[in-house]
Image 1 (cartoon, rainbow, N blue to C red):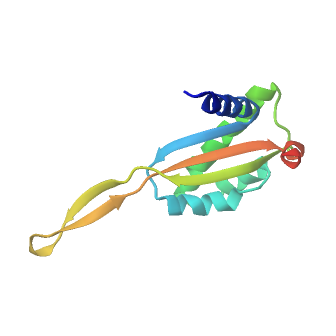
Image 2: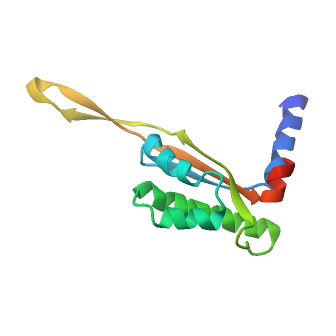
Image 3: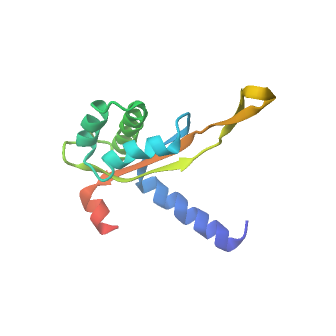
Length: 135
């Protein structure tokens, strides 16, 4: 690895040590459905977002709720204290595409229709409001 790349990688590592986040990889739902749920909680206070996700009737909301709880636990671990109401906010949440399983469904007259079973990756960053304003 070159010197410039090494410096960049080290800076990224240092930045990651101060941020609290959680990843959810290879979720077997389409990214479009997951983005609907992510848009509901983007920028919300975490305990309000947990309430929104708990009472949402979308299947993807269950997975995002579990991921958000993980991100809160990561923040509590790094800061060595419990999160209080009104303190933590979802700074960033994004959904990316993952691998697509390609399958064939039998069709009339010897043909086959292609089925694409999509999956996605979700990432959540949580932080306090004052740290978000500084950045």
